[in-house]
Image (cartoon, one colour):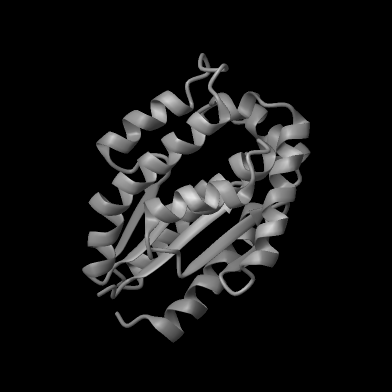
Length: 214
């Protein structure tokens, strides 16, 4: 039986969610929570290897459905090997991206269809949906400008997509906020870091207070 709390972070490229999530992790650990921070695709050896294939800048010819299947495969192994054991141990899991990324990027932006991508991913994740998803909403122009300025950031194949693609990703996420309004909470990621972090930790602490015992 699941005992922990599964929290995911979503958003377009350059939204800053990874940096915010790291500070959230530190805050929750300081508060006494047992926390696991991980990412998708990746988090464990097999999934990290799949990540290197998906995000390789040389793989520009990758078919959209192939991309969906690789993400789902990485997600399944990550879930079984790392996320589920952590939840069963009563830990808080902070995951940088999960199923919503596939729905927004491949389902909507790639034009494969959210229902098709959802079907594949439902098979992959079974009943393990996030308890709470923080969506970092950022203007694609703002996000891409941040990426160009941050020389230390990993630049991957998706960063090379044009602005039209990233605008479609935004539209996909907006649809998801309506489809899963009970699960997804929105943070304005166009703001300065401190404001984004403050809004994020407040949302998470409220959820922890009502559904999780330390």
